[in-house]
Amino acid sequence: MSTHPALQDASGGAVSGAAGELATAILQGEISPDDAIVRTAAHFMSEPRVEVVAVALTSFTPEATGDWARLGGRAWVRQWVRPGLPCTILPSPDAGPEAALSMPWLSKIARHELVVLTDRDLLPPEAEQDRSELARVGVRSLIASTFAGRGTMFGSLSVGGRRPGPWDERLVQDFRLLNAAILSRLTLEQSRRALAEAIAAGAEAQEAYQQFFGAVGHELRTPLSAILGYTEVLIDEADQTPADPVSGAMLRDGPVIVRACEQLLGVVDSLLGAGRTLAGDEERQDVLVADAVADVVHWHRVPAGTARVALVVDVDPDATVRAHPSGVRQALSNLVGNAITHHRPAGGEVHLTTERLLGESGQEMVRIIVRDDGPGLTPGRLEHVFDPFVRYAEPTVQGSGLGLPMARTIAERDGGAVRGESTAGVGSSFWLELPVRDPAA
View 1 (cartoon, rainbow, N blue to C red):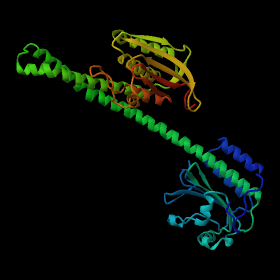
View 2: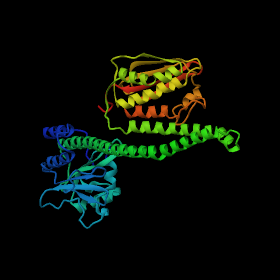
View 3: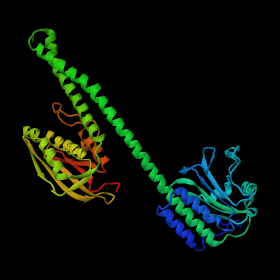
View 4: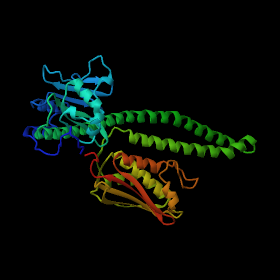
């Protein structure tokens, strides 16, 4: 605490009942931040010693700005003054922001602690600007503090008067309590406003997603399909005259064009599938994991049979997660599809199991594990397996390299994660973790 003859010790005293009730109403959200400031000012104006109350908001805009003065685009300021008294902290309407009070000596202290000034005439020589400014506005003594917390400066609160001398300890503690209550409420309100802005931005992003992926589907898939179709026709025609040099070149290079088109179409389809999933209008729901797994296994029966891979399911029939249903199925489909693709020449097994656990923040989670007995990955490859377009399959194996990154993005949207572990020559396990309850609840 700063010690100086002009400053009063603010550590002692009890809070009044009226201030305690008002602070409770503020903290419980019974009144708006604007009303909290107005009622706090009214509380202090009921004290004979207080002749002016001033509030400045620097990073928070009042809900109704009609009673507030705007100072140079830097702050909103409002004051309450006893009728007929010369005390005022507001500059004249035609004055610039330089006319506002700055009080550099006192402001430096107020950023860290409560300032209780008993007499401006007792200020040290280095506080001459503070003394001059207080004399100009007719204030001899004051109590002041900032609304500052978590690295954010919301503004300041001050009460003052023309009479010098020590302030009543009860009034000082009322000030401390109500200043802290308003700060807490401003912090909460700022978070709510930020959340509302984030939700609005998310809605705009969702619309942009839909427009972008619609353009991808039209502008990329259509010409690619045409190239692929014409190339296949040219290959068929060249097969009729294989001795012709042009036909021979087409028979040699045409399949390369076809494979490249099919590869690029796979990338486009992956993007479109993820785009539809991420930009869909469905909301988070309770998703029965067993139902989602059953759907995914059904979709992969044919490719699994072709690859001689057995799908073994042993999941908790009661396990439920809170997520987007289509997202759960899309992410699981990517994991299961990868497990089937990366099989041994003789086939193998893919096991789907579940386990319950607590996340890093104590959130209840369900982990859906997809384990294969394929060739596995080295530590170096596993480190980059979630990078877009990274593929470790043979060139003849179709794939876009987007399955795992897309699955991770989908899971993270619902407050979950996709991770994995692998041992070269033994197999891999990749899992989808999702919360049991809405992460925002």
